[in-house]
Image (cartoon, rainbow, N blue to C red; front, side, top):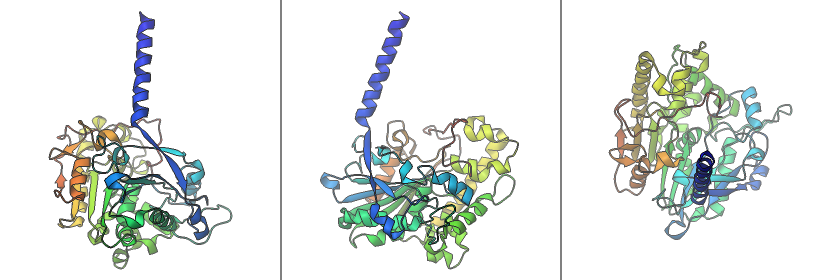
Length: 402
């Protein structure tokens, strides 16, 4: 009887795996070898890369460019570590990457963009594609060339048909979501005059807030990133002309000047921001916040009160967007980070909703000018549609703990 139960369980598991594989899409890598001669290289000097699933039917001249996320490196030590990972070298990247959520090729999973040209641009520079330092230290052999990578990849895609784009979106998650804000107008400038071009940032609206000890940790961290990578000259001039360059790495100081239509998806209690901006390890040496950061259900009443204050600070920073109808936003009260590349939070019956719309529906309607969308959720824990993140303390993702 036990053996029969085990066999049935194994059969069910194999069946589920087969279904998953049949529904999943794996897209081959493309190396931008032409970029090497231009100095457009990853931290270790390897060529930049992307994955492209070609559009078809009505989507043949529509392009969704998704910039990969994965934090930043702010000094030689962190960049040297990163150089030996997929976030610093195309030699370490998988050749076939799974596309899901906003990158899915199935209409039932991605109704508005399934037949577009969908591109995932790999992230290997550590500066949200803003760095450009000509000199290379012969000892570290680190290359800080993120801005060159961005341009080389876009030139390669233009040559492969994006020059004929009728619709285009520059999007991204986390550090890639910040990229989509910082490069939004320059992306539009590369495309045909008559094209409908908009930008979309998922979990990329990082705010300038003090940590629980009162220190400006994230501001100092971004200052180091901008300085090390030589990013200042590639940040929006309308911002750097009036503020210190490192402050122009914060979307709240840039977004109001973005001329291209921009849509933001962000959790007001973004799990990355709670872990790294509000309660970074350096501000919590005794680890009082550790369990809370792993699972919001384990937060004390005092910790939740502090997080409610962080939400209010986030909403004040969001006001920098301005009232323009060309802006859209979906700000839910989930404990989450990056909700568009995972099917369960992008478009499914039980996906997070605001005004009874999923993220996919809200973004699609906004892009096609069917309906504007500017919604902010009620405070935690009111939203029962959330998929709150529960982290494994034994797993150390690349994009946490700065």
